Length: 448
Ligand SMILES: *Cc1c(COP(=O)(O)O)cnc(C)c1O
Ligand code: SF4
Image (cartoon, rainbow, N blue to C red; front, side, top):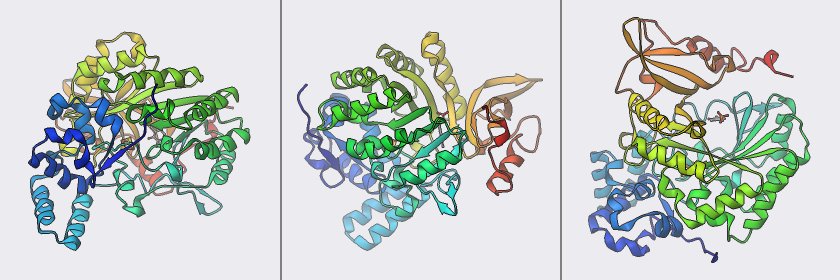
């Protein structure tokens, strides 16, 4: 395969993209306006190989990467657009910030909770929310090959610095893992950790392997590189070295779980992505896939069924469908929970058991990952059945609970407990945990 040189497009140079000739001046202006508020970045692979420019107005990958006018509320759009025309930089900056803050940049206790400490040192690049899995945000992996317009990590990309997680402290990470033997998984996340060059990634992963901690079974890497820049695994100068690193993880007896973000079956079509998947699987790594469900992008059951089937065809394991978070352009992307469940279940019914490794739709909320199991009737009351797939308290997992039927609710905080109850079963316990009255992990239940 010919070597490909990465070329990034952003708000300053997007007019250089040759395909911009298909857009009207108004459409380009809309990118300019919305792209000032929400992060915007594309690259030559996304532009040339993923987007179908003959029909860009309806193209899911176009909407996934290029800001759309409707992503801002009408009055905010006009506000920023007028300020841009008038050219008052100070006022523009101030209003952009105002609009960003209205868009709930850090939903659901993302920043304040779950940051652990060792001997009084806050481990700011680490999040430990679920007992078995630690999230690690390597400081050099806090950007992406292209930006998704729905991204909830967006404050990291637009320089709202105080909202950023990051860490260089691999020694502290290892110390923390030593002291918390129930952790089995370390999940590298970002941004996108595979934006880092292999040398940097090695400096995180090799010490982890060398520390020889028997509790660590799985190293996970959450990434969109496979979809947005598959050349990372093919022709980038350190692609082979990266694949060798994956093999090294496997050879050391750990599982390398490659958590790939795919949002639409169109991303599985190129020769580059198919070759990249093949090369990754050859290292002994496994690829699991996940995506949020979003209006305008993937809100049809057939899209999901097709995506899961293609993933399985290529040797990947469908893993999660997420409910889009309550941040950014949620009025544009948001789908009510009941509707997400309908789409999920229709897609699920139309694939064989091999594709049904997927779980969803799931909300990553502050108390945990909450799945909508379905809509049903209990003693004459129409209800939504819910279940924790992950909980701040592991004891909550897999206990069904019920909310009043509400076909408009988009998030757990809009749901009311069914049967006239005051609160959901976990709420008191959750309050104790968040107020630090109780440690969320009951250490006595660890399986030796
Ligand atoms: C999703 C998630 C994990 C991993 O959960 P799995 O169900 O094991 O994939 C870990 N930590 C946080 C904060 C998460 O949101
Ligand atoms: S790849 Fe992930 S972190 Fe990066 S912009 Fe998209 S959703 Fe956000």
